[in-house]
Amino acid sequence: MIADLVFKNVQLHTEGGMIQSGVAVKDGKIIAIAADDYLPSAKEVIDGCGQHLLPGGVDPHVHFRDPSKNERETFMTGSMAAAAGGVTTVCEHPISLPPPYSPELLRRRIEIADRQSLVDFVFFGAAGADKLDEIPKVAKEEIVAFKTFFHEPPEGRDLEFAGLTMANDAQIYDGFQAVAKTGKILAIHAENNDIIANQIKKLRAAGAVSGMHHADSRPPISEIEAVAKVLCLAKATGTRVQLCHISTNEAAELVKQAKNSGQEAYLETCPHYLFLNETALEKFGPFAKCNPPLRKQEIVDALWEYVQDGSVDMIGSDHGPFLTAEKETGYKDIFVAPAGFPGIDLRLPLMLTAVKQGKLTIERVLELISANPAKIYGLYPQKGAIQVGADADFVMVDLDREFVVDRTKGYSRSADTARVYDGWTLSGLPTMTMVRGKIVMKDGVVSAENEGWGQLVSAIK
Ligand SMILES: [Zn+2]
View 1 (cartoon, rainbow, N blue to C red):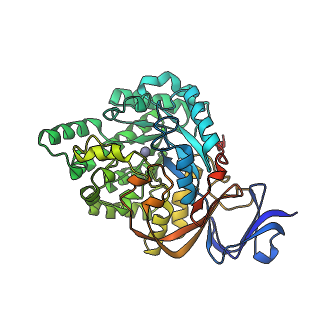
View 2 (view 1 turned 90 degrees about the vertical axis):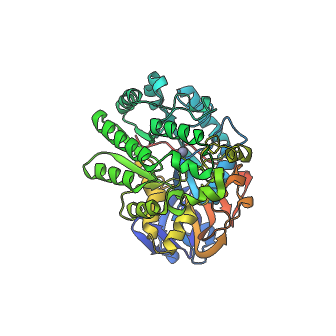
View 3 (view 1 turned 180 degrees about the vertical axis):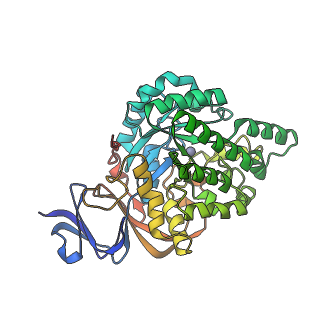
């Protein structure tokens, strides 16, 4: 058999670790892993020049927005940024206009992604207390999980959060029961709405509305209390839960204990809770605003331990594009600016920089950014692994090559708002991204020609 292409002269990262081996691809699938001399002949040979070939990234947490708010991002531009960062499968969260709380709305979003995305994708459905009847219907569609928020819609964004919130205990209890019946994972943005609303009221009354006050408005306890509630209600209702973007070690500890006691709970954090602290809010104001907020350095240091000890299951970018003008509203009043910033293209280099710094092994990084999310959402081993039969999704990286982050070169439509890492020197430059046998990024260049190459990935039922 003649393969479509083979990679030679690469350091290949399989689940068993790194091996000096090549890999052969045919019809978008991996057909052989063998020493270079034993690979089948192929129409094309790619010489990796000794670089590392990793499984393509699976980003468990992105917001590409489409079909509305296209000025912030589209599946086209978001997926180009994904390709630049070695991400070959994105998990799209349901903030949209309106969110996908019904089968029709979900299908509309899938159709758009199918037309535009360069990389493969899966969707989360919206679960809200105001649309409980829709939850079982959406569960029968192509989703890998549900998502909900424990707060009311942010100011001025009511429609973007329709069917997506459970804003009090009664709603949470009803919502959890509804999702539990479907057997799907419920991903939760867990922060205590009452504490935050009251903090903001007090801070505003005192005229404390600058960047740093964002952190004051959402103290660690607002996350810790909400995570405790999630675990308690999930246990009572039998809901499989994912704690999104955990920012504190104390919340991570609660999830770790729940996992140890046998509860099905998945722990996600993001690069910004590991590489930044709250002083970025002082420096970048609204451009460093995310929810939960960036924390004090001692919390950041303590959170790293949960990444290192295996408690954290996955690292999501929480790629959150907004317009520069929208972010700038926060200079006058930080509470007005939307929360979130882009980051899908830097998730892998940041984590590989941590490898270089001796904080993590590369094997652990690959679990966090590829294998684990694929396993949790039922996409493994089609995604998240280099093994025979899996999709030929790869990212090639030069672990030694340093580069300086330059937001003006970003592919996200909101790249201008990606301020927090701008100018940083990182190692582990992705030099090629391949999705099902097709190169979608080479030497940092993502070609728009591959628009629509991405496909919906069906979870294994
Ligand atoms: Zn998010």
